[in-house]
Image (tube, rainbow, N blue to C red):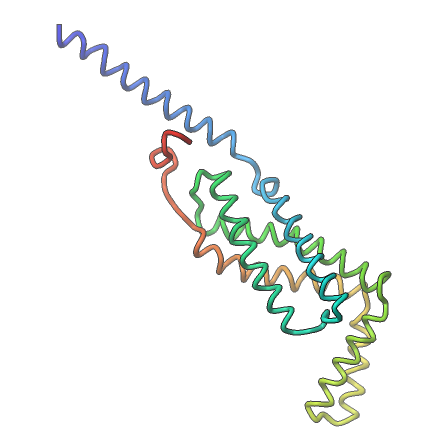
Amino acid sequence: MLKQKSVFILPFSYICLLIKQVQLKSNLMEKNVSVWKANINNGLILGMLSIVYSLVMYFLDLFFNKTQGYILILVLIVALFFMLKSYRDNYLHGYIKYGQSVGAGVIIFLYFSIISAVFTYVLYKFVDPGLVEKQLALIEEALVNRGMPQQAIDAGMAVQRKILIPELIAPISLLGNMLYGTIISLLVSIFIKKEGNPLIDIPDNQ
């Protein structure tokens, strides 16, 4: 009689285990959203955050202040940390490899960089075309303070005048932001990565 019960109980237990694994896999599939789609809101939020910050600095006449640039980088680092953590916990059941985290961070910064580049173009081209002259004046002042001869300053400023146009400033800022974004993603992902087997380590209440 005991053997007969064992014959039925063991297969039944095995089937229940398989069903549970299928359910877990199904839950994972439901959250298996493209990394591009999952992080588009994060990129938009980061972009809008940067625009608001830049506008505040612009109206405070601190747009070209180096210190505010460092503060913005710090804000981006903190924001990216929480965004990647949210992506890991909400879409990947709390597990993410280092490479996945870096990739997600770069995607977030791609969205951010595009938004920021469009804003930069609009600001320099339409909102305040005089920003170019202000920036050129700051560059010339820096060259003078270095003690460079006037001929070298004139040559350098001639090059800067060709580069500092909205049509070039915007794409250059996009590339620069992507470079910063990649570096920040590499650093932040060190603290975000969390590897494991979701089919084994996911709690029953998830």
